[in-house]
Image 1 (cartoon, protein in one colour):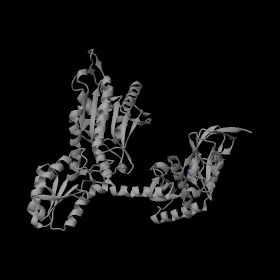
Image 2: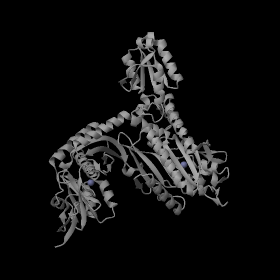
Image 3: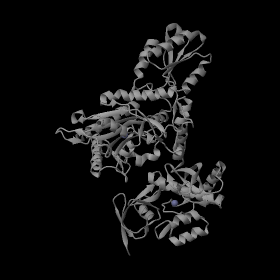
Image 4: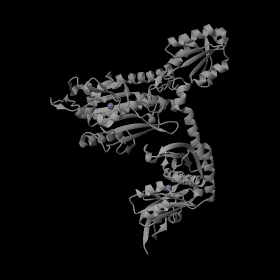
Length: 636
Ligand SMILES: [Zn+2]
Ligand SMILES: [Zn+2]
């Protein structure tokens, strides 16, 4: 009888009969408990009931691990499909993949599902979990599987199976429900403990608008009720913090169909925008950047040279004028290459660092536009660096240093670094790509970062590193990036004079720290829930009078603060103080300054700072304190 050698996580090797189930080996090894719902065999997750037929390593997969959650979420998609078939037998099932935090399943159904349907489906799902059906894997020859689903009237499944190259396919059966699936799944429906159906949407079969419309149900599933509740709370919190909602509440920006995807920044939003630009600009002297201003509109020849015309044309605003085709720039780099070529640089002049806050326009599809995070009109804290190969490492390190400084000012502490390497479609020579990727690895190592590599995710013209910041809602955002360009300097024929008087091609870097200002503002709004640090707050202080008697004093205080450079408003309306305070708090004004008779008499103010009442202070002392706090990076 054949035996196989199975290595458990403790390093022990178990010699068991071939065909022994994963679950039995885990039991023998003493690592099976009621949290384990699948097994990892070598690098694959499989059902607990899967027979082991070869020598392998095995480990338990717990419900609350990332791999376990995937099994739960996919199993919950089957559970939902079973419930839908019970309630709506005429519906056809299609596919039900796992997505971040949950799953969806697409159904062929004439009418959309209603919110009431979702409740009934959820109730039926709970019944099915109570029944605790065994989830059994079967394998069938492909033709038999096709016949089985044809008889069930599941035409989409028939189409899917017909497209599978393998001769045998696997099915999973639970109670009366059977679905085509690779698995793995939980051992029985009772193992699904915590789920919620969250929304409904229309979706095209195979994501193609020429195909028929399907009805999609989204859901979320977790290892236990506590995790589910925490997640639903995070979702609710995210809704409260949605930058579109806060943008309206705080009167920062709006969007209008007259220019889709192009935000109107209201006066307060413009303060945030301009203050961010000023902040970045204030660092440029120290980091050796010079600001430039370049055209918005070019003949498309420019992007034919850069390579963007082929890769990016559909995302550009193009127009035919006179005999020529023109475009509105979607990025600054090609223009900066022209600027570099306007004079002759020697190695002594390098590095040259061109910074540009210019507005950029990208014709994003209308369906993808969302608030400030996906726009057609944007600006970046963009810059391009031209240097010699010898200067590359020190330029990259300088960028890392600047990123650290900027993230420090915003208090972004949870940062992960990614390296995005050569994609399938790329421009430039392989040697340049390899050297560039090596330089990025070297510098990140030197800077002490652990790096996760995203293979093939680089831009088409060069590899890239990203500094991903994790916000209070546990979402990860790439803000700062630097890319080494392996194509553009050669395509534009850029040259500099070397030490031995020959001509060489400079190395070009693209980099931004905040990224798009629009997107950065959205992220910061949601991260802070609109409680901007004092230096960025559009209104830093609001003076509230108690009665009409303090009108003159209130105005005097307001003017003094304004003269000291603090963005200050006066609320001398004839309203109750409590009402005025609540309103200022809703507007997230950091300092609320109350003046009554006593304050007017003593030349003082009674301040409140983010819900906390502070002792009365004299105007001079308050101005000194606020001016010190209104500096980027100050703790306030
Ligand atoms: Zn499945
Ligand atoms: Zn660029």
